[in-house]
Amino acid sequence: MPEDELTALLTLNRIDGLGCIGAKYLYEQLGSAQEIFRNREHLKKIIPGITTQTIDALCDSRYDSFIREELVFIEKHGIRCVTIADSDYPARLLDCHDAPLVLFSLGNVNYNAARTVGIVGTRKATDYGRRMCHTFIKELHELCPDITIVSGLAYGIDIESHKAALEVGFPTVAVLAHGLDMIYPSAHRPVAKQMLSDGGLVTEYMSRTAPLGPNFVRRNRIIAGLSDAVVVVESAAKSGSLITAEIAGSYNRECFAFPGSVGDPYSVGCNELIRDNRAGLITSAFDMVNAMNWNDRKKGSAVQKELFPELTEEEDKVYQRIRLKVQGVHISTLMTELNIPYPHLSTILFSLEMKGLIMQAPGSLCKPL
Image 1 (cartoon, rainbow, N blue to C red):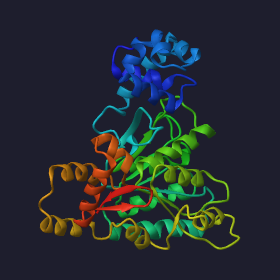
Image 2: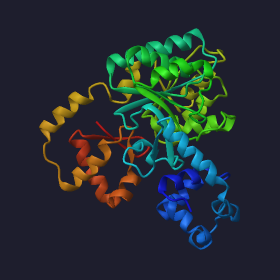
Image 3: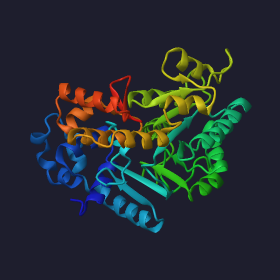
């Protein structure tokens, strides 16, 4: 059995065929990775429906040497490991059913930055797309200088977003589809090195994990999960950026898209997102900032505290849970976590909204103001 929780989590992360959803389910049912391994021979009784193959994999010692080598690699290269049990694990990911149990990073990544914007798009960016990236991020910095830009370090819109963020001084984070023993594409290594001082590289994959196609799809969910809002700049009719937008919607994140010319192959995806009401149309950073209610949040908060200094104990408990989640908290989550019945919770939320502290958004989301 793995000797400590990190080793157990890494082993769980490595087991073929289990997947992030299966690993997270086991973890939630048993309470820790070590408990999973302690009870691996009795899992049939604890978790009805678990497959024999999964139990056999948990009992397989062939992972031991790989994990030992991985721990040496992590220590040698100063890689930061954040597990789902750690206080600095990304709070935005905790509500995601397929959140990774472990994240690895290099650099100076603030997983819980005040505001984060994911920017994605085609790998074959046009001059229009590249120009929009730089203009949008420059405008965004003038309006909200405390934003972190998240993308995927790929060709096209991704790398332009990282470059534009570096130019204006935004922290920027790249979510990778491989281990931290390489940079893909290698041509982006200089930009990746620049990002390490304020931002950095993040992945759920251990070393010696190649950048295979399915990994990029899985990577997209982390870009969406780390973001308060996802912006699609250019996209073809079928692309990874559309998958990211779809995942963002499933996570109750806001999604925005820049429109393009009718018939332009690299604007078809954006135009369809807007047409189908899966993304809000934006033409500037102001449009997004206004939609997110980020334009005067600090000023508004100060006024609200002066006008409404007193909250009941229950109102304060609910507000404290909501205020940490810029992208919003689902009402069902509040009911479950705070153990407040819906009729009473509805009254509390109405009171907080009247006091100007929160807003109730579409999709049964409660957002701080």
